[in-house]
Structures are given as structure tokens and as C-alpha cells.
Image 1 (cartoon, helix red, strand yellow):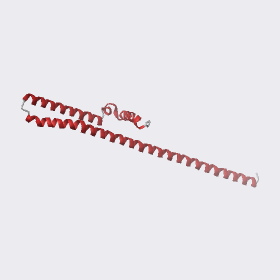
Image 2 (tube, one colour):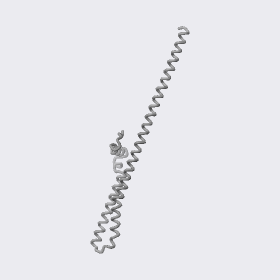
Image 3 (cartoon, one colour):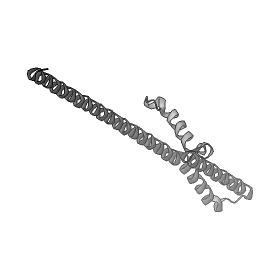
Image 4 (cartoon, helix red, strand yellow):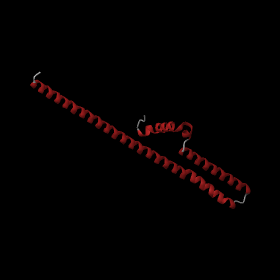
Length: 150
């Protein structure tokens, strides 16, 4: 090989190496850009899931507040009025019946409060553990929010 052939060979080798380097940088850039895009999508999905979870919690709080107001509060108010009226009942039998009815209302109220507290801290959590409870919860809201959980 003479010097001019060696010069062309070096030039071609250098140009090929440079093109290979540029191609490698381009591939790395594409990979990084793809990963950033995936990360953005995942962050968006997490934000949406968080929003859906918060919305579900707010709806549950509203439901519990409504149930407390409509059922428990009304039952306790009725029992209070019935107990307050006891001194004005002259007939002993009617007083006993009124007192028994008040006790029933209080028991009903206690049962409703107990049921609500169990709904706030479900027994499934105690019985099956956190992971199974979360899977059960996600399964129950899956149809409402149209998201598949893995």
C-alpha cells in the first residue's frame, strides 16, 4: 500500500468511525427520549390514579356523613326526645314501654355506628392482610374508573 492508499484508508476509517459514533449517540438519545416519555406517561397515570383514589375517598366520606346524619343522628334525636318525655308519662307501663323503645333506638344507633366503623376499617384488612385488601379494593373500583391494574 502506498501513502495515497493509506491516506484514503485512514480517511474512510475515520469517516466510518465518526458516522458510527454519531449513530451510537443518536441511538442513545432515542433511548433516553423514549425513557423520558415512558416516565412522563407513568407519572401521569400515577397522578390520575391518585385523583381517582382521592375522589373515591371523598365520595365514601360523603356517604358516611350522609348516613350519620340521616340515620344515626335521627335515631339518637328520637331516643333523646323519648327519654326527655319520660318524666311526663304517668302510666308506669307506658313509661317502661317508652324506655324499652328508647333502649332499642340506642342499640340500633350503636349498631349503625359499629357498621360504619367497620366500613372505615374493613375486617378484610385484618383477615387477609394489606396486599389482598388493596387488590380487593382495586378490583371493586376497576369497573368504575375503567383502568386495569396489574
